[in-house]
Image 1: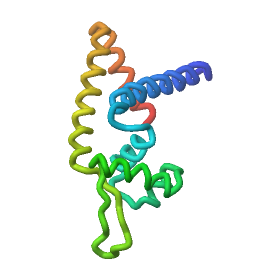
Image 2: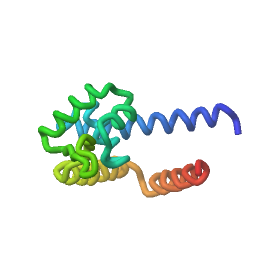
Image 3: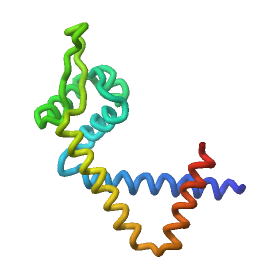
Image 4: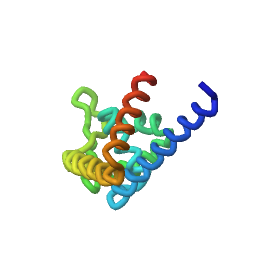
Length: 140
């Protein structure tokens, strides 16, 4: 395979990733700032964690993370949970309110993608599906 083709594929993946992130950002923007999305996304992926661990993952100072978490807690999107074993240890976890909103957002994102895919005909949609399955298989 030519290097130019692998470069083009790589660039297309980056472009598609950027477009999907833009779509998601548009959906989240009425609710969250970009740093808040970073915190919520990390908690969503990795589960509850201490502020220091969250800061390390995000490469942010503990004071910065603490401020972001304070604002999210005031909106009832996260909870601070004190450890039963060691009361000094406090973890941050996603709230039920956020989980409900997150579920609604996922349905909205899927509906948005479906709407955009309607621009294509059946053959184009099948080509996309086949191509994505093939790409996933090759990357595994």
